Image 1 (cartoon, helix red, strand yellow):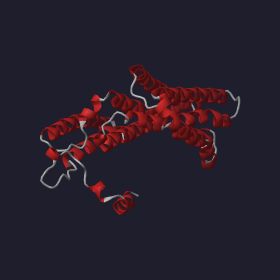
Image 2: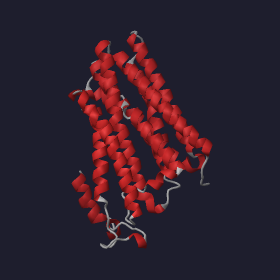
Image 3: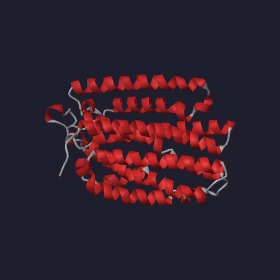
Image 4: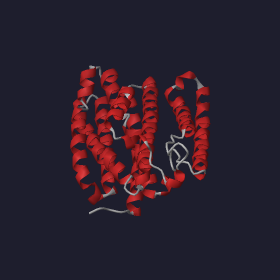
Length: 300
């Protein structure tokens, strides 16, 4: 897929897309083309070392040593990027981006949100199949209404994002919490032999609706105050934060669910993981409320 994307990008995108624009005084001897290969390697290795213990924790305690090493590598990368910029070269990421409050807060919101919510669908699939004995088809179908709600809410949110601002994202986070708490309640009833797992068609629909209210609107608002020359790198920073949050969240939440299930059952494993997700979503909501109180530019 990556190779096909590169081939199609080369064929379809304008020639200027392959020549990064930089300030005249920052152009280097090769005409301004500068991909900052050292920065790319440092960041890539740092992210790899941070994620490694979360996805390979079964290898033993020693694998967790890569976490502080990875954090140190990210620190080295940040120092390199600042030095690179001082030399007049275009860095991979201009760290001055994080001086923009709306960008830094928005990045934290989406990283926390992905850290929690992306594991919901994996946990539901495992609960349906391993906990309740359903087929993979049934496990997939239970999330279908949520997917449809997400598509509709994303379209509607896109029309009002500039009028409502970051409050729209906070409302979405609140709606996600409603869905999480309602799902926990359904699973608690099921553990007592009451109700039906298909009630989750409704509770998960709340989470799906929240997806459309949070992800795209937050990205739009986070990038709103970013200068145009940083558009590419700022979007990349957001995507990197989402990928890190997703990887860590999947590893942490599934590990938590399995550890609880090992000493109890899948009902308790599901509820324990969903409570942890709800805590992380609440943290994202707190950052969102801080951003709402700070205010920011709106477009009528």
